[in-house]
Image 1 (tube, one colour):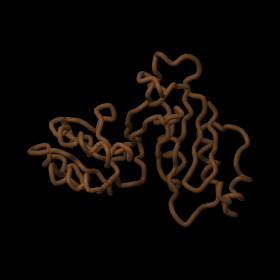
Image 2 (cartoon, helix red, strand yellow):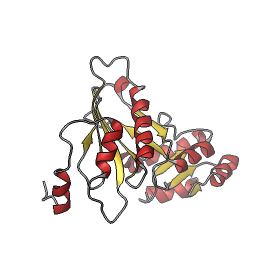
Image 3 (spheres, one colour):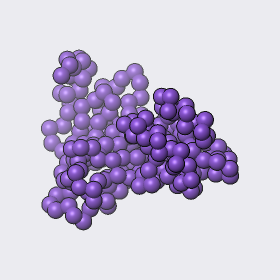
Amino acid sequence: MGKKSKRYRAALEKQPANPLPLGEAVDALKKYDSTKFDQTVEVHMRLGVDPNQADQIIRGSIVLPNGIGKTQRVVVFAKGDAAKAAEEAGADVVGQDDLAKKIKDGWTDFDVCIAAPDMMGLVGPLGRVLGPRGLMPSPRAGTVTPDVAKVVSEYKAGKVEFRNDKGGNVHAMVGKLSFESTKLTENIAAFLSFVNGMKPQSVKGTYVKGVAICATMSPSVRIAL
């Protein structure tokens, strides 16, 4: 592990020793020394799922009540009226074969890729490029949809996707450190509630084993369950 900066070591001295109620955890996070940029706040959940079991994969998306403080770049595979609607909803790039070729050649300068169902024959072969970057459109994540305009609007408003990793953990961006404490708390609470409601029936024992929040360059703060 690399050497920690003086600022980070100073922040560690302020790190709460025990888990805190959500509101207090957010306040503690905001008390760490600031940086020259507006840090991204993330939530991390340790879940009691078996990621090797298909019915225990935790994957989805949610529109956070106060957005994420970032304008996401959205590309859309659509044609005809759907393409026009996507453009009107604020999509950054809308295309078909031309867009597919651009991505196949290595262009991935975007945050979200959405596709109409009739475009999946074109999008499918792009899995090698999009898959490893978590950008592949998926019905389960809501990014393969006949109503592309609605989904574009949701992502522009602050929708976030998530999927458990190989260790059964879920991570997501929930805002910026400059957000008011109440708005950060509302976003985190909405995310936790959403994931809590996704508990697979096959999971035995404790579903949510631990929750922590952190900012880009700060230590974490554990949340009391």
